[in-house]
Length: 110
Image (tube, rainbow, N blue to C red):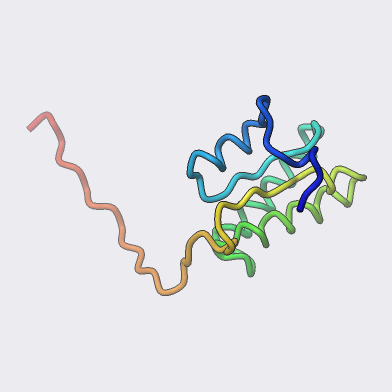
């Protein structure tokens, strides 16, 4: 059982509200981080999430990559938190996908 401070309250965070509304995962920060640090962390996060590294659709692994970047500049690595609706942090699987080029759209001036 969690302590009373962990119970959802009337003034819930946006991340908590999104998670309760059915979103599969929400990443939030516990406190503000500097813009340049946030940009570097976001780059690592999305690079891992889309599979350029080992994360490949795993939001938990992607948040960990972001934390490592933040920890390199100070205690900001303890700021990111992940809210998951289910037990699995793998949101999607990009392996085996077939990527096709987009179809050309017809010109409206014909």
